[in-house]
Image (cartoon, rainbow, N blue to C red; front, side, top):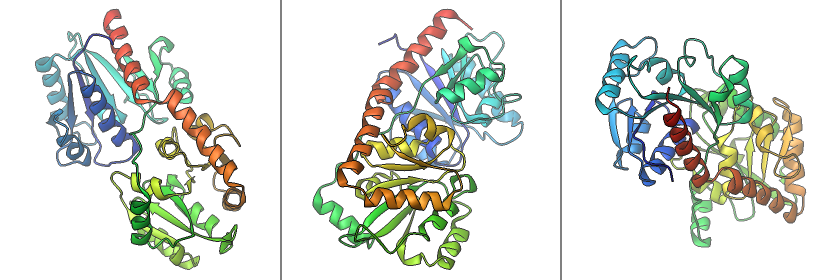
Length: 363
């Protein structure tokens, strides 16, 4: 394990999506590995609350949109006072507001989880981390030096172990029925997640597949919650859906599901696919860049075109009508990928080696 290096981690989000949850997860893992970490977060944000019980030091700044001069100045003062070896920022807002003092020995590492605009947001960092190879290629294509672009993936928490009685209780609580297929979709209810495409696909399914009825858990919330519920009503799906809202953590949903559906229109990685594989669930996903990088078609998951409701419906029918051995094999292949490439230990060691490498080479 490389020598501990103090690091300052900055995130300006008020949401608690996949990137925000990974921020919390990574800081906890670094802290447990004996690394001195400090978080800069927005006050009263879900991320601040999630970190609050961990004992990790936090400093709150507004981290507002636009040029928040108070936060920019506050970050500079923190870097001067705490003297971290590494300042790691997450997403555009925090990165744009992080301008290290000119004489500071600290290294600015910008971690990206999407194909974001580089100019004005990211170019001033010393190094960049992309959580997919495709994203790293994009960063180099934007003119960032290849020798300072690094690929480090995400990891997911250990799975929740549920006994038969607990599963039965959850099925009863969510009115799933004794023999129904349970399909799960999870994410923010926003346009790019494609939940309306999913609803149109579900409307094309027969009432039973493989002599079993089906029910879909939708875990998440967002600005499209009411329009999506209205669409589901118009499509005659109201009795088939369970709108669970935010589930923090969402492990109970994965633990009772038979399959996971990812209908996104845009997804750089897809933490939810990794989470589903954590529970050995077979996955059906659209052909987003993230899914194409993660999934080996017909081996670790099934793919369909983005926005293709009929194609998604056909893949769902195919999966549920298949032999149990086939579904199990898909989930097992995904789990092997997760264990070999996206383990907590591997990701934490990659970050620590990156910090040590950058510190040894200077800024």
